[in-house]
Amino acid sequence: MTSPLDDQSPQVPHLDEPPPAAHPPGPGRPGDSVPLVATALLVLTLAGVALFAAGLSLGGQGVGRDADEQAAIEAFVETYRRITDEYVGESDPGELIEGAIEGMFGTLDDPYSAYLGPDEFESTFNDISGQFEGVGARMSIEAGDGTSCALIADPCALRVVEVLPDSPALAAGLLTDDIVSAVDGRGLEGHTLEDAVRLIRGPRDSAITLTVSRDGQELDLAITRDVIVSQDVRSARLADGRVGYLRIDSFGSRVAEGFEAALRDHLDAGIEQLIVDVRDDPGGFVDAAVEITSQFLPDGSVYWEEAADGSQRSIEVRDGGLATDPAIDVVVLVDDGTASASEILAGALQDAGRAELVGERTFGKGTVQEWTRLPGETGGFRLSIAKWLTRDRTWIDDVGLTPDVEVAGEGGRFWPQVDGAVPDAATVAADPQLDRAISLLLDDASAD
Image (cartoon, rainbow, N blue to C red; front, top):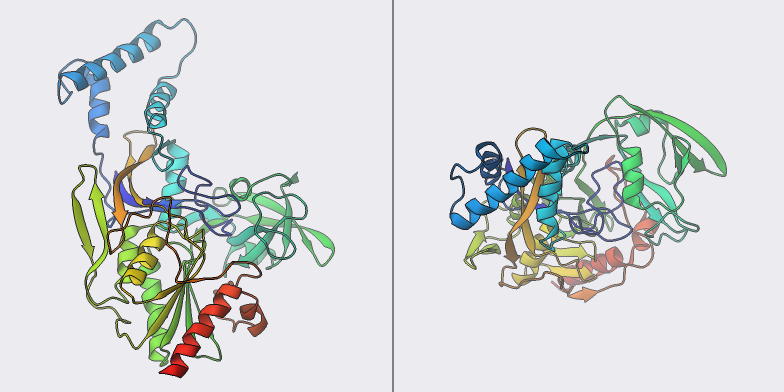
């Protein structure tokens, strides 16, 4: 089963939400969450793995594409059979196969191409699809002043950024700004965000106890995990209703539809100044990035894809965008956690002159991964199958996008809530990048 995806990159405070793989198993960076990117469609096939499996079962019966490949398959099968038949110690056939596949990927020197065991493959793929099993809370590691940290160690703690509506965490009484200090009695000192994610998430209907600090008191909250559907799009009205704000947490399978609905709400209200926030957005399905970019561009390329043989093809804008009118002003907020599919969106709007980028240089992930499910209970793998280039054919891998207006990400970070609560003006003003974006839009509106 194959799926062109985008191997997420750094992700935001998503604890009970899919964590992008930390620093490169995909792309990731300390203190955020994890990686992902995708091509355009979600198609699952067995691809070349069927050949590999056939080689194991058929041995030397000519399954190689040429003499060299046939010899390699025969060498592998001979080694496998000698171990399973004659090794004096214990061996597990499944572990031998997994180890062999993992070893092949280890030779590639590519953080975005990797073998994933059965559990990890299913978990990661579900994350990308926007559904996972957990408690339904978003968290991040922060110091007291809101600065992001890589590890939970004084003065940095695991803070609840948001509790999703209708979630097990909400039912158990978990609140925004609670500090989580232990999971099932196990302290979190020295853990990364990804470590904490692995401890807190778990199978549906399983129980977990979170120890939290709140207003100087320590509480134990018993929570029963459930299936959580990611809330990938958040929307708010800022500057007394003059600016529409749209936050994309990741490019999951449902994000394009949610983004279109939120965008339509702003436009129907007569709002013509928009902010699209993809800070700390690790990416996701490339197809979702194409859909969202097409809301703002009337025609032309969204990005270019370069295959292994060097051939290039343009991935074109799709018809029917709601905000293609140049009278609608757009600013895109970016930072060093903006990666993959979110860079496709930001790069296309910047190259087309359709939006200004405000914030910090982006992560710089310029490859597309295809996900393949292996036969049986073997798991699967992600493989870099193409480079992607911006609308102007620039490859940004390890370079990133440079914002039009650079603003350091110091200070607070605005997190819109999914319950539609009106944001506090002081909270918005404490986010320097957001505050600058609002000023740019209102200044442009006054000049028109």
